[in-house]
Amino acid sequence: MKTKLLLLPLLALLVTSFKAAKEPVPQKISNNLNISLLLDLSDRIDPHKYPDLYQRDLQYIKFVQKAFTNHIKGKKIIQLNDQMQVFFDPAPQNPTTNALSQQLKVNFNKQSSKNEINNIEKTFSEIPAKIYQSAIKDKTFIGSDIWRFFKNNVKDYCVKDNHRNILVIITDGYMYHQNSKFTEKNKSSYITPSFIQSKKLTSSNYKDLIEKNRLGFIPATDNLQNLEIIVLGINPSKKNPYENDVINQYWSDWFKAMDVRKFYLKNTDLATNIEPVILKIISG
Image (cartoon, rainbow, N blue to C red):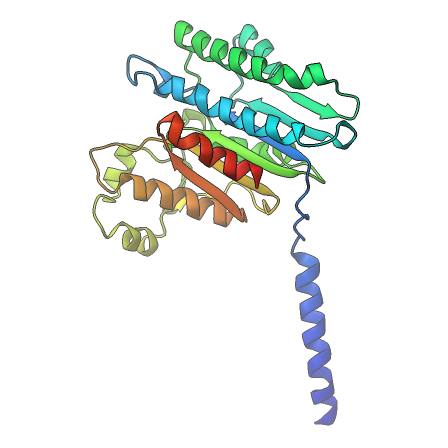
């Protein structure tokens, strides 16, 4: 009996050690920023359908750039180890758009000059506008395969050691792409207004229905403890008073299932309202 009692603490220690070894340890918050933007170039930016919505996107990009610039200007040159980049998924077929997007990948280190830092504002004011205007003019609304981006690319593209990693997704909150439309039991890789209607998530008991039927997004990956996510531009249909709540529930549950510990979901809003929010989040 004494032998069994002596073994119990040892077994408990082994179990604890196994769990500690299995669970990834989140990195300490670094003063080096790694900001990624994932842009949704679906028909949501079509000015004939949604007047001036794409202009708000451009404002959001500008605010993210401003927060990044404030950060690097607050550091000594010798301390710089910061980067910002823009992604599309799928990649635009237009070679001009691809060439332009390459200019939106900026990296600063101790060899960077003050001129390079001062040029960020100009680059992020002019280039995104050209990309959006090109997509609108050509009517090449490639959409955004957000689910597949998380499955295949988010860890490689958006998570960097010894950095504070932030992914900014600019989208309307509806997740859909023809190449990633599937279900697993009651979970799906997409959500649309018609999907929400079909699941009867149109009344105050939407939470109960989601929990009871185990609805939600299919987790695309895991272990994203070292990635913060900001979703900007959520624009729910006005036909359903609970549309916004359902969208937020889906995204929140999805991020939690992928081990994201810090995320923010923000509806489309006037630039004057959203700017201080973005600046505060990124400034930490």
